[in-house]
Length: 183
Image (cartoon, rainbow, N blue to C red; front, side, top):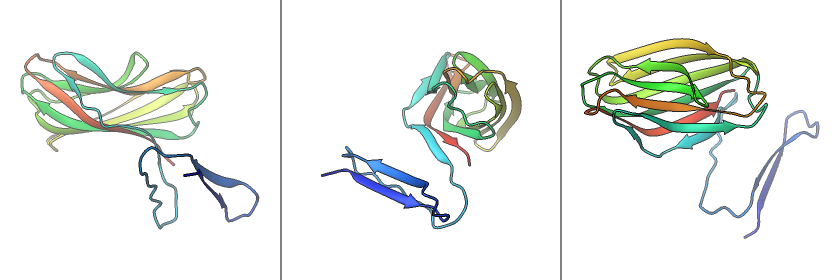
């Protein structure tokens, strides 16, 4: 089987094209494009690996970015979710750069059940970030917060998530995570 090459010329017919080149895929893959106008977010990374924190900190998803790769004036959305078991201590989810925690969202004491966290990271410049985070646990404990960071992405850095369980009898499991570049 040869490679598949698709080129699409835009409305303006100015010679600038979108090109998709797939060469010998290892598995069957589909790209579904919605039948509507507007912008579509781009999935940068996704992770279906289960990470579990029991009385420890676990880096669950860390995405490397090469120098200068963050788009100025655009935002990333990191979303992850899983389950919390054990009602002995507060648990937390943190958005981080490399080894620096930028924004931590912490549950109420005794919160258990399914959880989802979403972080929006906006880059007004290559060296500054504005972060907004929301954490929901079984739609009972809704925590929202915001922060700023000053990591210079003109050099290579990583962004990602950390999950924390505050007691040896409690666990936080992250079942999935997605990072999207928003339009």
